[in-house]
Image 1 (cartoon, rainbow, N blue to C red):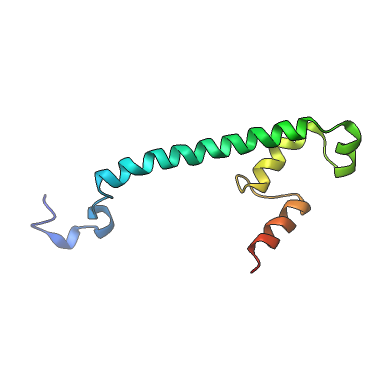
Image 2: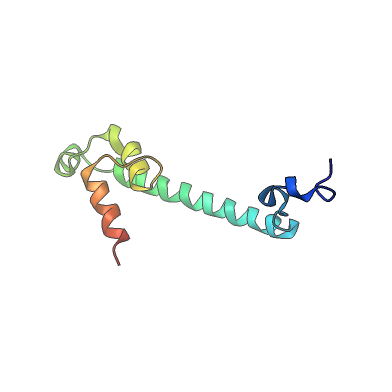
Length: 95
């Protein structure tokens, strides 16, 4: 049954048109570049972290196995559980 005939059953959000084709087409390369930039930042940080020796890791209170978890918390990919990350996120949100 058409919503044009019976508009009272129409859901406005479902009937709203999406962004024009060209807008979506132009957004795709931007999204890809954003994703690639994130991958590059992760790889650069991982290389830098891998250069730390055991003494430096002990000084910052981390083990090699914690890098991915720390990265995910610090970038909002998972719920932060480390006090250090929580403080850093709160400091960023202050004006």
